[in-house]
Amino acid sequence: MVEKRKLLRMPVIKQFGEEVMIQIGDEAVPGVILDLSVEGISLLTFTQVPIGSVVCLSIDIPALKTNPINGKVVWVAPKGEMFRIGIHIFSINSLDSKQINRMAIDFNDCENKIMLGVPDVCVKKCSYYKICAKPQKASIRNL
Image (cartoon, rainbow, N blue to C red; front, side, top):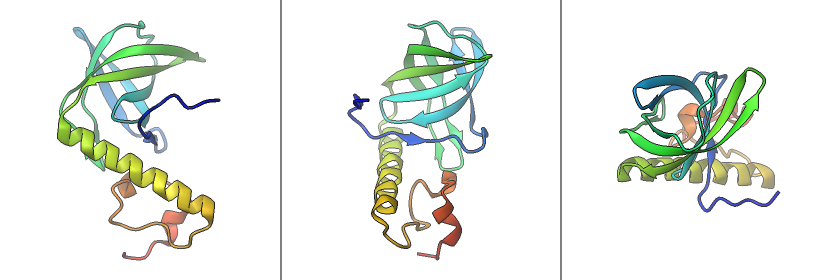
């Protein structure tokens, strides 16, 4: 499969604990963030959200608390009784954008180091550290 994304993406899911409320008009729909980039978010919901819906959400997870983010639902995929939805972000605070991008870069740098067999890849100053669930995190030193 060819990657079409221009910007790096990072997983956010950590044991299905990173819930977010998606505002769609007057309705609020709960969802779980699966992955995130500056340009898009992938979520799981129990409610089918129509393609083309304009949505607003704020992220409040241990490593990231954003201002409201505005986006548009660009795809929906049924997953049993749930729905995986893709949201294209069209409005985001510049500081939030920089933080998300930094986290995605740190996550992807770590993945590359793990693939290359680099020892001690995990450091507490990593911007992705608070939501990281990689086994390498368990052997961290205070770097």
